[in-house]
Length: 104
Image (cartoon, rainbow, N blue to C red; front, side, top):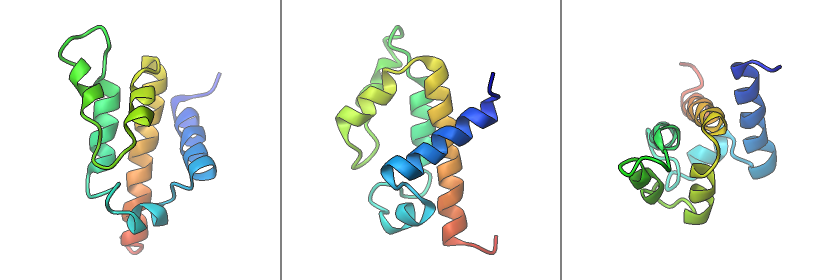
């Protein structure tokens, strides 16, 4: 059985390999990855619960300039998968920050 860290690392690598979502990509596409947008998306996808009427709103609040269908598919994944993706979003934000400020 893989640990949470291993599962998040696998998901983060998939984001890079499959979609090209590197730190450099995020810096070069600020319309999708403005400051804190990835961490906000991580919180929203983790908090979404289709059985909770209030949390249903998270599915409707698509991050700025993100594909609505893609976002809804993420929100519909089981909780454990959403946590893994949320962790990878956090790692992705760290990659973006490191690319922006490599000496920090």
